[in-house]
Length: 174
Length: 97
Image (cartoon, each protein chain N blue to C red):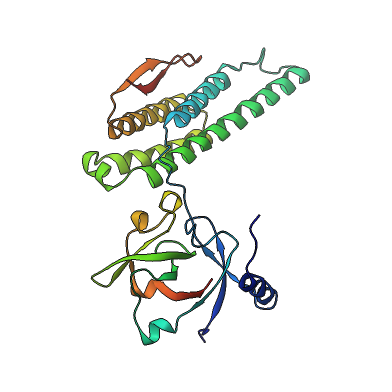
């Protein structure tokens, strides 16, 4: 337990009359722990959701009400997950872009800014549409980012077949 | 009107072990009216890229630019990240803590 000094006690009383302004002894926690894996998983999920959405077929042009309910429910659930995971891609990419990648990386990979920017745009497009091509392009961009990330870490990136139903690839390192 | 003294409360751990989270500090711009910021001073400063007011120590001064660092280097986002700051970013010197 921290014992407050007399000065701190006095200042806490002053705080009640003249509220203290916050000052941030802040830390964005430069812990050095960054990983493109979450973005890859999320991009695979977006792709999977688009495939599942495309697989939904009614039994007829005018399906019975119960079937419609099921279809609407299924579309809602798949869309929700697609939305969430496209947002995860954006979140993870923003962290890599804003916190991890630095000027020296840009010198080596001058395409980085455009790649990041396009990936964010693609993730937004993937949210808006049910578009297999967009989802595939999103995954491809995330994989490119992952490869650059691992190279900047001094390790050799490799592509392995994912054990996901998307049957796409995941970028890891040797 | 700028206050002669201002009361602040510290949020975060970047100034440990000198200052802890929730600790109160009193700062004043006056020392920098009559003198200049010096290496080692703990200062209240305007973050160069966002709206936050930060508390850091002046680590280096070079060509009228101030390099601010946290005492707790392992958990501080400071000039190592956002670069050195202008004199006008430095608001006040911490005079009591």
